[in-house]
Amino acid sequence: MSKPSHRGQEALRQRRLEVRRAQQQLREQEKAQGLVASPKVVIPNSTSPLKTVKQEWEVRAAATAEQVRIFRDQLPTLLKNLSEIKDPRRDPENVDHKLTVLLIYGILTFVFHRTSRRHANRTLTHAQFVENLKRLFPELESIPHHDTLYRLLRDMDVNAIESAHVDLIRRLIRNKKFYRYLIANCYPIAIDGSQKLVRDTQWCEETLQREIKKGEDTADQHYIYVLEANLAFRNGMTIPLMSEFLSYPDGNVADAKQDCELKAFHRLAKRLKAEFSHLPIIIFLDGLYPNGPVLELLRKMNWDAMIVLQDRSLPSVWEEVNGLRNLQKGNELFRQWNRRHQHFWWVNDIDYAYGDNNRLHQKVHVVVCEESWQVVDRESAKVVTKTSKHVWISCKPLHKDNVHERCNLGARHRWSGSEISFLVEKRQGYQYEHLFAYQWNAMKGYHYLMRLGHMINVLAQYSSRLKDIVRTQGVRGFIEFVVDTITAPWPNPLTLMERLAAPFQLQLR
View 1 (spheres, one colour):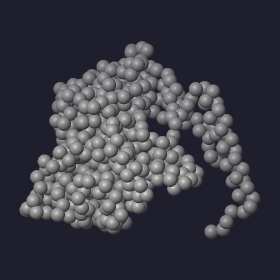
View 2: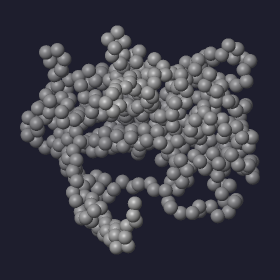
View 3: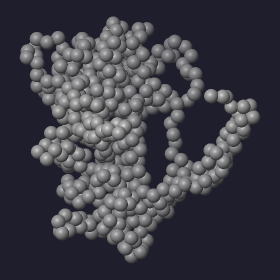
View 4: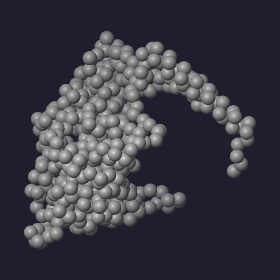
């Protein structure tokens, strides 16, 4: 492949310069119009600001102590719940590692972004690391081999791990840690499904199955699919909450019908209601869910909800929307948000009939967001206008005072939060798609430990005391910074231990 000529390189540089100038002019025009984008956190491209060893040690000690204190703040509740789990080993009294030690070690594996069991065995058992880790977590009397944790997860009730996770969330809610970030005075829960793993061979009977094309032939493919529930707050903080695994036996085996996301949603909804029976909740769902049974379930649970409505979904509802729009005068709002011109219009009190002979009815409300924004075309350096449309079904009536919060801060923000959560767990340190165990029960156990570790790191990421270092190093850089600190010899262990002993209260930004 030949290199571009000098003339071609010069033309490319000139076009890039024109694009940058056009972008700068567009930003100045938008700023004059009051169109301001949400601030983006970008890791600075600079050398380290820590110029002396003493200064670096002080920052490392502060960051490590704060990360550990956030974990240790959750530890009493976590240890209490984990200690109540039945140990499946024959003689729990005569084992090298207690059940709680193994599970705490498993959580730390994901807190420290270890990519596999072998990676954890190789990096978490160095003598210096073990010595420092024991200082930070005296509960870890010894560091086990990951095969020992695997055997425990294989035989224990791993659902109890998620129950301990949910109890931590309940404690944080009870202490009003998330009260400032609610949406419509409700706790926002985003529910979405994701493929966890795919293989060409069936390695256990619980995996789902589909047929794919391979050239002119077809082949069976086996995969794991999980429905995830996350708390998705208005400040961007997304906290793992619950997981519902789809499995072949949960479908209709007699009719050879597999489990599906809608069936899993009904199971997950019942579990959420059992755990948070009196909590005000708003559910955010994608375009798979607008149907009568789901709406009926949401009403029965006494939950608010915003559900994506696609153009071809619920034609009878769309007919009512188009017919009633001109009759409900004043149901519109023009506003500017995140560099976009938005036009909201909505129709309340639509009667949606479904079921046999349309004998069942649900009252729904529909809101449409039509928006436009300007960007610079990278080829021509000209400003072009782009448009998009978003539609949701709302379980509560819409009005001018709540449409921005429900749509922009809730339903729209929910999707970015959900996508970011999946991106983080799949690509940024948590190995969502890695199979830590070829055994169904142990695989689920590692998944629950991963979600717990992710929750701990989210609390650290949004801690007011760690905001500066997370902003300068990024989340993954911060975790690496802490791991490197624990791995290295400490010049002054007493300083770090004094920080750990100081009074602590979790404060989120």
